[in-house]
Length: 119
Image 1 (spheres, rainbow, N blue to C red):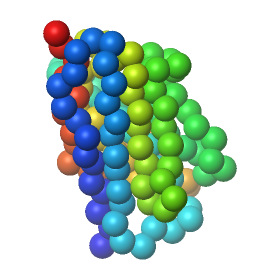
Image 2 (cartoon, helix red, strand yellow):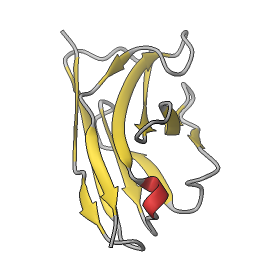
Image 3 (cartoon, helix red, strand yellow):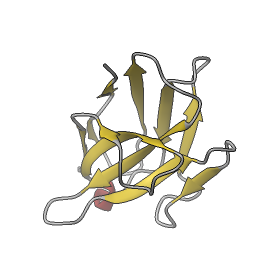
Image 4 (cartoon, rainbow, N blue to C red):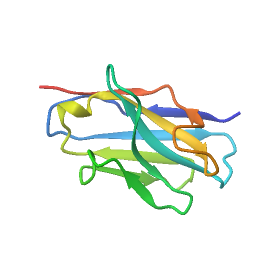
């Protein structure tokens, strides 16, 4: 049984930084990729950043240049380094694990971790 668990959210002032972590436990096939999504209050869940099957990274325009997605030494661990945080980054951040053969937004989800950017 594969599980996805996020950690690292919290309260930060505008301009600050946070680092989120995600680990997928269990046996992960190489045909799976991982990424980060977020959902603000009253908004739809949106892609923040992810990896493609060839290891290329993708970012939402709103976070380019501020957020960095990376992998741990184990393929089943990813991170999201968030710098220059803005109030509009406030959301629940979800880690996603999906097959490369299926569309973004499908697959397994973690329980989410709250990120609040406020002074």
